[in-house]
Image (cartoon, rainbow, N blue to C red):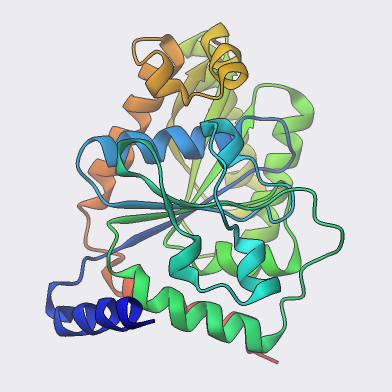
Length: 288
């Protein structure tokens, strides 16, 4: 307890040195498109280049970020809501100094997101937020009532899809759902498992044209990631791709699109929203 109190005092005393944290929700319309793998490897790419990054697995009860890294954290985000374990205690430091919060697996019942637990989460998260340059929320597949609140509160939303028609349809539906709740959210698309750069660009154009025609919005193309046998090999060995083979085609693709995301960070249009993530989340969770 004394150590935690000392850390909190240190943070408060150094509040003038707070970072302008960028909050990013990574989502998909369906499972199995490689969303968590992309979230993890983007976060590792940023942390490996000197940025302070926190990755939160929001697929509570079915999370796999820790599995992809081959780690066994002592606590998960489920422990925060179920057992009142403090948020700082469930943060684990992984490869390349990446901080992450595991989602937990095999829960026997649903987590109760009652107001008391959510208020405690937001109060503790507020104290941690300014320590990081980037906070990634790896959302569960699809959109639930509570996940939509986190997505809407984030500064940016990355949507991951593949070139398969069902995946494209689900990605469109997911973007439509979020857009109807807030039409100011900037969306960024990543096309995974492409056979060629041309296929990736054509798939993005097809989705973006439909979104523009029927919903009146443009999305940003972050990039395409090639279909690469190194991905499945890395998953089997429980080593993140950018650590397993950083020269593989998919790892290079992730590095390129992460670089594009980083260059976009230098803009000033969203600075105000960065400071209001928790305020936005509180408003969305408790509005009537």
